[in-house]
Length: 209
Image (cartoon, rainbow, N blue to C red; front, side, top):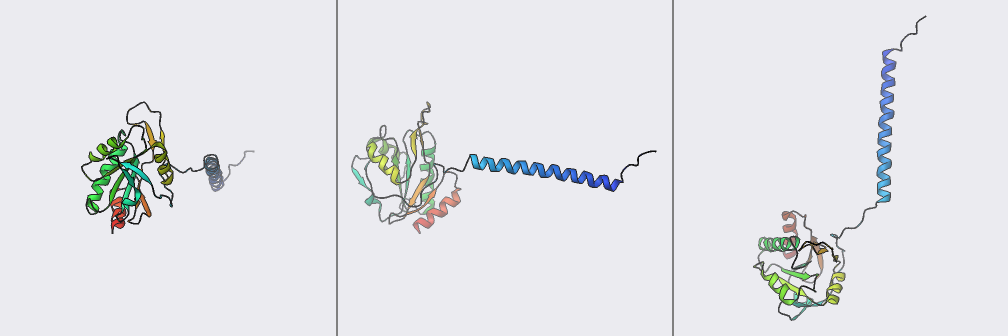
């Protein structure tokens, strides 16, 4: 007596069920790994993000060695950037970009560009003044004591620490955002390094409008 083979329709259903079980197992495993990853490695705030309320008055030193009060910035919108004069690429690229965008947004008088050093040990008034002049456009270079710089960094939510990198120009890790303030000294928004120029220009035109 021979055993009859199952009907083809039955075999087809069995195969479909098997594939369904395998697919569910794969999806379940992926979901489990994703949940585990999110649980173990929760998203963390990056150094590029900026608080929504910060700032405040400060007094630093300009490129001529004279005290510079933030009150002098009132009346005109301004963009403030924190970096250091020996920075290899990010700082000069950012400041050059801001000079270019300012021309497109209305010219040198549309808003002020302020550069604040995060490395006062190496960047005195002479250094920040000469550095600002390199861009052939009005830029206010500021420095101060370490305590003054630390306080302003705290007020403006800026991250900056020595990197330990041996290569010149890489000695410091720091926030690379540009902070935009209106003519009343109120924070408006930021321009990040990866913002397209069109988006950055739109923000600046709203700032000076």
